[in-house]
Image (tube, rainbow, N blue to C red; front, side, top):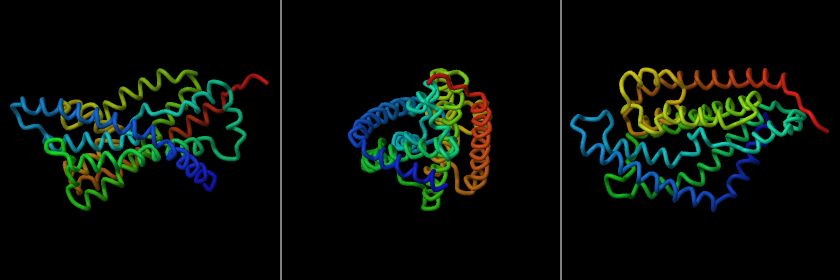
Length: 267
């Protein structure tokens, strides 16, 4: 465990050095945030029925999405790991005295955390003081705020566990393109990153609610806004933990199977 913590700390310190990249990312995320909000604003101005999410809840949802994008985006990748697999340098990783699953998991976790730490505060601070309807609203209450932080962190662990499956699949396909596209596009949609899940058709919500992707973004953001009340959030929390445990177990099992078939050729 000390080895994994050391990797996490080193990678976190390394990631916090890229402040210029973070500034560019903040500008991009403000641009996309305003674009998405204006699209929803136009949609809400023409609707003839009362949507399940109010416009202020959707705006809050969008700003949280932009602020914590590094936590929840599935297309975020570490090209170094893909190169290790496809070039054969994975042999050096296998010589380490630590398990490769935990080692990579700690690296990916620190990467996402460092990126979010640099970007989230400026976006949240500015968004709170914007005029309505572009303003980020405060959390429903203190309990909802505490549950939001907890569910967001658990969602981060789930995203990293899903990301590990992308790297593990590269051991078989030897190309990251297909897995990244499939997990990135489908996972992003099922997580509510394109359309918040309450705005989806009922039949689709019935499917999405049984999948783990909703626990990465939709669940914590709706807890923040109070759309999912605290009592319901506490009931869903064990399911989020169960998905995390299942994804880590599947990842470790498939990683073990993949490593048993690895053949490294060369000098």
